Length: 153
Image (tube, rainbow, N blue to C red; front, top):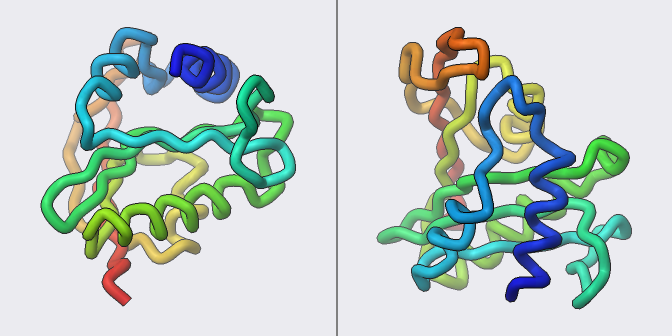
């Protein structure tokens, strides 16, 4: 698993601009994965599950709750963006979440995140907003948007 966390952290480092403060540190990832209800998926540049020892092009991290799965993080290395990997990971998450009994997916993100169109295209709808929820590295506050997607069918 340490190799998987190394690969996940490499994507995290490349995929999140530090100004937004969205990236997790290794300890946060390890602590989340210590619980049986947190799951990750590593994807290769070809859109298949990343094989052991192979660098990952992206990852998703999610947490299972009662009939819901929350997407905690999804990242793709900049050089592999706009190649369909985000959609493949969302499809994989949907299928895995259904197998774990989830009827809907949830996620929360900062307002203005360019990934919003990916989520909306997948079927996520805005269900709420949290004013001034996130803080950028420069101290500026940003609203959070909460999304849900029905996967019961």
